Length: 171
Image 1: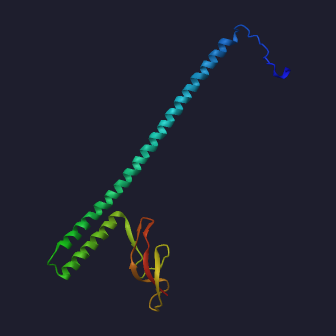
Image 2 (image 1 turned 180 degrees about the vertical axis):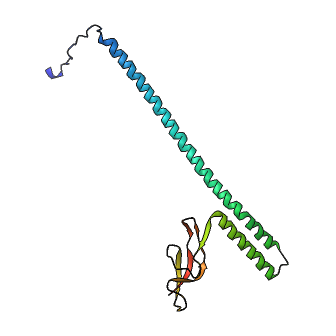
Image 3 (image 1 turned 90 degrees about the vertical axis):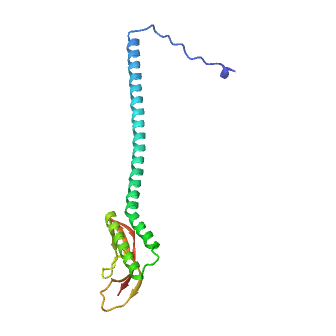
């Protein structure tokens, strides 16, 4: 039963207030103020980061929307002309051909404004980073690894490949 006896901590006499007590209280209060200041700084930085994150997300969305808007503005005149061409009831084949050529010219102009360049032209050296070879021919009149026919043009936007060209390669 001795094990179950309550053990009481030894009583320690607390000396009456000494000269150190007010100094310790001052230091404690100073540390509490510093802690509060650091908490406030932390909360301000946290709020500032949250605002930054939201602002950059909004800017990213605005940049995307502006890019889409610019692209649509470049394409709208082409769509209008295609609609006009389709509404022609008594147009000859030659007139339709001229209209399609004009639309192609508009597309080329729009691509130029958007910074899109065509890749994979006949006579160019075959570059597997820009072209997909879907056919191969042997022709002594054409050099080795030269594009002899383009089935589908490829396009680049700056340094980014938008679509690889589908080509026929000689030799």
